[in-house]
Amino acid sequence: MPKENGILYGKFFMNGNEASAEGGIVAGCRFFGGYPITPSNQVAARMSKRLPEVGGVFIQFEDEIGSIVAIIGASCAGVKSMTATSGPGFSLMMENIGLAAMLEVPIVIVNVMRGGPSTGIPTLVGQGDFMQARWGSHGDYGIIALAPNSPQEAFDLTVEAFNLAEKYRAPAVVLSDQTVGLMYGKVEIPHPSEIELVERTTPEKLGIDPEDYLPFDSKFMIPPMAIAGRGYRVHMTGLTHDDRGYPTTDHEIAFKLNQRLVKKIEQDAKKICRFEEVHTEDAEIIVVSYGGASRSALEAIRLARNKGLKAGLFRIITAWPFPTWEIKRLAEQAKAIIVAEVNMGQAYHVVREAVDGATDVYLLPYGPGEIHPPDLILHKIEEVNKIEG
Image (cartoon, rainbow, N blue to C red; front, top):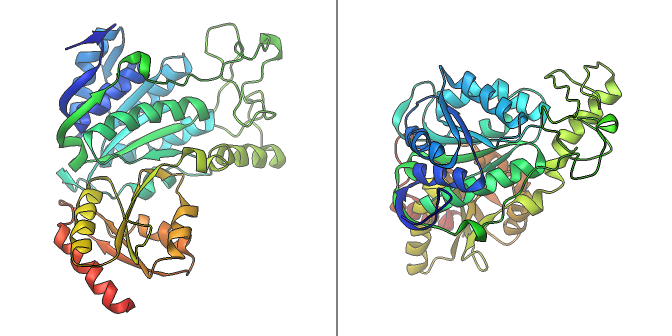
């Protein structure tokens, strides 16, 4: 296998979990803290082998809480860091995802969704963490979540998650699922020189003297982040804080901080968001889907077109921030929208809010345990087409 300083490049046959691990390596991840949980185990297993080959560190912790706290600490020390988990483990991480958001520490979490709630079906697929990825931790903050639907995208979007986390000083989630994580396929890894990587902005890069540095300087939408131990005074707390990082209960300062934590991502939503549209230019019925389920939806669109039905696919790639404006635009041309997801309706609620009454929105829930058969989605397209006339 061709390597450059331990980093693989070339064409490979691997599954989505392995591809996410390699994406992390390419992006510069040199610390992984994790705890085994099905069906994400192969991310950790591959990282345990690969990180020592590139000078990184892998640690298996006692639980998911220890794992995410450790990657927050490693990132504060200047090391790009990630973890991987699923369902119950993702739930355990929620408090500290909020901590990472409050501290504005870039981290990446690969969440390979499985059937739930609770222990659910550990070995089979679910997509029940769509809302949790955005709203799981208490309070107001912004977050980025990307939903791959192939091993190639698992690689690509893990690299992108690191770049976005570093740029926006925020947690980023690779919202994978069991279908994608365990699916094998061709993955092309470019030579490291061909991959653009983003590094966080530090006060050194901006020429800020240590005595003038404020860790959460509100004159910046995204303040420069000093690396602990490099001469800059760093004060971090999960408490609401002022520009120095000192705790405060002052309403004006608290409101300003919360606004910035949300706005720094939301104001760039159109720059961040990625999505795929297939046959939407003349579609009367549009299917919205993501992750493993979107693969069935694509086949259903092909079958519908063969029957003369004007159906199209809108595939969510960036789940958060959500591409509200694009859904709204499509709603103004379509007779109806169908949301196909492996849960009882999560993206469905966000789509309805975006549509805002411009057209009818139908939910096609499924699971947990399997993605929709294409024929089921096709039947729903035919049913909705009759209803809408």
